[in-house]
Image (cartoon, rainbow, N blue to C red; front, side, top):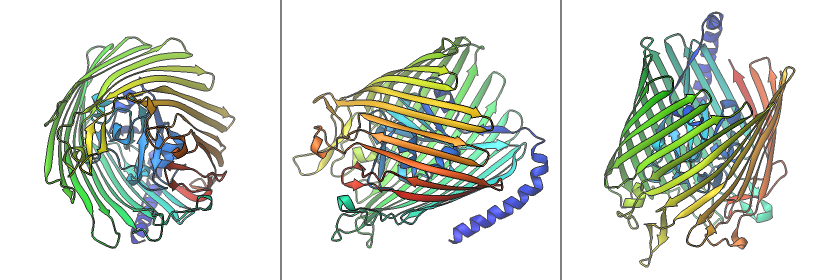
Amino acid sequence: MKILKTLFTSVLLVSLANNAGAQTEDTVIDTLYIFDTHIREAAQFQNVVQLSPKDLRKNTTNLSEVLRFQSPVYIKENGRGGTSSPAFRGTTAQQTAFVWNGININSAFLGQGDINNIGYLTADEMDFKAGGGSVIYGSGAIGGSIHLNNELTFNKGFRGEILLNGGSYETFHHLLKTSYSDSKFSFKFSADYSSSKNDYKVPEKNYFNQNGKYQHTGFNFSTAYRLNSHHTVSWITEFQDGLQHYPIFTSSQIPSQYKTENIYNLVAWDWKQKKWNNSLKVAFTEENFSYFEDIQKPKTSGGKGRDYIIKDNFNYEISPKWKLDFIGEYRKNTGEGYQSGISKIERNALSIAGLLHYSPLENLFFEGGIKKDFVEKITSPVLYSLAGKWKTSEFYTVGFNFSKNFRYPTFNDLYWQPGGNMNLEPEISTQWEMNNEIHFSDFKFSIVPYYMKIENMIRWLPTSKGYWSAFNTDHVTSYGLENRLDYSRKIGENELNANMGYSYTRSQNEENKKQLMYVPLHKIYGMVSFRTKLWEAYIQGTYNGITYTDSEENIEDALSSYFLLNVGIERTLLKHFTLGFKVNNIFDQIYATTAFYYMPKRNYNLSLHINF
């Protein structure tokens, strides 16, 4: 409570200062500083879903809810707010790269992002890119990548916003954002806090989410300064602190919990000239996690990892038709486990990549990329990508993407005792996709068939010695179709927006030709919103087909298909205040995304959003 009071006092002071500076705000032209520009270029050739802060505020429970209702990603969640993992195109969480302002932040221990412990509301934009991207974003970018981006504006004066959010099961999520900028200097501060008792019940399944409580706190500081017309220096720091209690099924079970503390730091120097520009980034990230088998006793296991990163991107325009990109990155991973058999370890990795862009015609684009990683004690392949896009008419655009991607073993895969395997090879994938975009009137329709093969997939399997160990086993073939329809229309001063996505995913183990576990064949998601000057109403929904929970397609143990629908309404008051009310799971559906862990039935949410 003391933290929230301090934050709200700061908002009041900034609001007063904003009134004083409002007279000059309209006399200058604002510009934008973006930490990760590669995602903009990737959107030319691959399917990228971009969500604004307004989109993110429509699902404030956690990041899993955002992905479930607004992206093609499948979410496997151990009860609401619990351990959660995303999956693109029939892959796994380890084959999904989490990218924070252009820096890969997947855990060196687990090889994935900690999805429900990420403070996504402090981001200014979130992007979901399906398909491989290891040439730019490194290990793990096989099935797709999730991008959390921050932006800084210039010449905007003082601005700010507050979000107060409360709902069923004593669930709260609050956000504060303040910023100041002039022609040379830009600063932004964000803070968010969420918590929930999370004690929902599903009587029909005799399910009570005991010990399901969670809590999260995050802070983000970012700033940029223009030294002159050619040079800009910037700095961003983010702190994330999370607590999750693991649900228990009987009162005789011992309650357990999981704690995380993550720090991300990035300093950048951008140097721009007429024909070339260079962006140098130096980053430091730290992850700390602890598992408590009994919440009343000291931690049972845990780990601490640090990453030191230097990344440089040099871009040169040879001519209006040709452009070169050179990307070099050095990364040092260090780690120390607790009660895991992992002592102090470190790994050095160097990568060199080159991208060639060619545009022979105004409506025709090509891009080719090649990359070599030098990873300590691991043999890594030469990676490549080739993409093209042709706007054949005002109505139709066709594109293709072909790439080779990889993921090297994590610290746990290699060093966990017992079970780590020092002889593991990196996972390697090759993929192709074809992008078809049709524009007609206010409609935009995309059709993306894809095909992917993964070799040397790393799996933990039981051994004859009584413990589990990591092995290179499965060869996986994944193919399918991703469709998306977008519609936007102005009706006088009102606006109607709609989108709907459908994905068909067939992801098979080549040995038994069975669908991989927790990969639904069908997923549909979408939203319709209607906005007037003072009101906005929206409906969002998602459908997941039957989902197998084992590797043998056992229908008796599979998760049933489900359809969820949320309905929300917002009313703007006195220009700066927006009051919202939302009903989640309006049809009171019983569903689960992970075996045995049921999700909440119908529940409610009330929000107040203040802009100043």
